[in-house]
Image 1 (tube, one colour):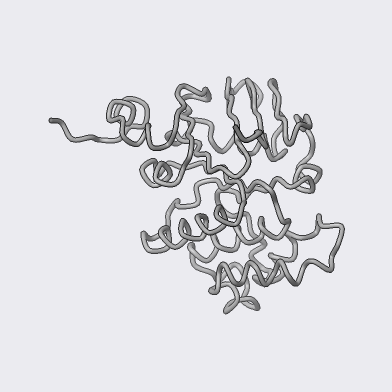
Image 2 (cartoon, rainbow, N blue to C red):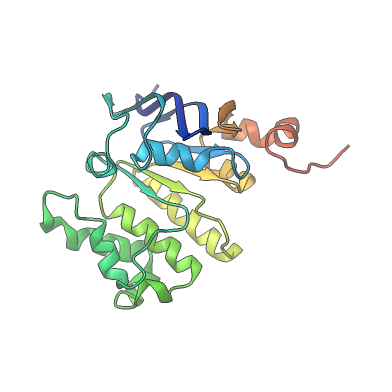
Amino acid sequence: MTAPLLRVAKLAVRYGDLVGVADVSLTVPQGAVVALLGSNGAGKTTTLNAIAGLVAPAGGTVVWRDRDITGKPAYAIVSTGLALAPEGWRLFVQQTVEQNLRLGATVLPDKKRVPALLERVFTLFPRLAERRRQRAGTLSGGERQMLATGRALMSDPKLLMLDEPSLGLAPAVVESMYDTLGRLRREGLTLLLAEQAVELALEVADYAYVLQTGRTVLEGPGAQLADDKDVQRIYLGLETETR
């Protein structure tokens, strides 16, 4: 079995008296696509933010490439090869597309690599190349998702985390985005996706974890969960046909 790039065990996050995540464990093997599923408020975003160093865990461990990174700051984590394309994009809206992308490469010790990484992003997302001098605040929702993903790719990560990459986007844009993720996977990039679009995520995921109220309640191969109607109805809230 492929050695895991990322191992999260018994992760807990609190915001004062509020519990964001109570007990989440997951493993991401190298080269795999892993989905983190659950309804709004299940703890998906908090889990990714804790892994990325954007919020401090109250308990548990995050081990990245056999190194304990629990509680490390975000700038230290992204420089090790783990990047997040966040929900809501968090772009610098007054800056241009290219300026936003270049900001994603600030952690690279070798700045000579930036032109090649820019070219890679523009090849993956030709729309961004067309709008490279346009302010990010003028982009459509789909273009902003492309830019957030491209900015994360500018750090040349080994594992890319995406938080709700399909949220609020038109079906054609979602299909294009997932085609791009499939291409990245074929190029060897490991992916961890947090999604409410369960059926879409299970189509591409090798393995999936289901969260409820901040806890890991179910896990299994993506194809197995996609075929289990009881799992979809009870844990994922999907309406299924009755026989």
